[in-house]
Length: 398
Ligand SMILES: *Cc1c(COP(=O)(O)O)cnc(C)c1O
Image (cartoon, rainbow, N blue to C red):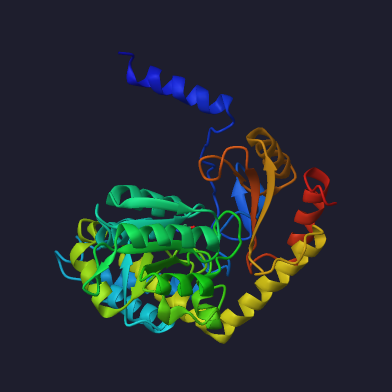
């Protein structure tokens, strides 16, 4: 047997050969529209901090106050040593924001998906996922042991085929399904920026007696009234059993959440292993997230969304792209080969612009892309600089 490092070096060389090697780039500044990397200042179009809240004075003040009052660490899991007040305040704020009976927060969105899906579905149950859902949902589905079906991305006909199959596989007997059927999608897809047809999906899951879980990681704070999300925007919030999201993107802090009925939340407290067997996040994160939700709902939050919409319209126009139907802040430029995306990202960096090359396994092989994300913290001049560089380097429409 080769020594571990020899074996790993062989595997790493293989990744490099395929242009799939990843490395961390150290940033010496706070998250924001400009990043300091290796002594150079780069314009940042890579973050999911869509409203520019991650370094906002209001969130930072809330975090510092929580450190002073509740300390740096939580000490244990919330069921073991008592559940600190900032988590309760956050969950009340979240439930009111999303208009649900209750909410539960996790250390990350990843942990929220893992704990929730494995709690709700076991080996006799059926999970039906959109082809492009986030890795945390795929991992949760595998870990649950449930029967798994994947429907083509945003394809309602294919979803209905899978629901028909599930309806036969788990028939309703004496008014109750033999097994649970859970459909899972994202509302705004993380790597493509497109939107799921939530209204039609709600109608389908009701027709077949399934449950629906919607991950609003990229929509919360950005879409809907006061940033409540796409489910709110489409008026289907009350018909979605499980609303999931992260506190680490537009809301500027960190953590994951599930919003839903009181029985759902009570059940997760009892059964979601990533919640039960994990130390509570730092109270400062909860306090920052509460401040982020409050800010997102305020007049200042609406101004930030207005600014973001302006930046999105500016970039789409400058890249000669059709105005995005949903006005998503995620704009993918799909280049195909991994090497091509890597080379484009390198050239942009040389021009002082940071845009990540997204490759397998985050997206399919051969569908590598530059994933541009816009933030309310970017200026119109930033966007013009980005568009000029993209039109020189990669844009086939230019
Ligand atoms: C980022 C993301 C998550 C995970 O949330 P974290 O809080 O970063 O762990 C889940 N789902 C989607 C769609 C995401 O983009």
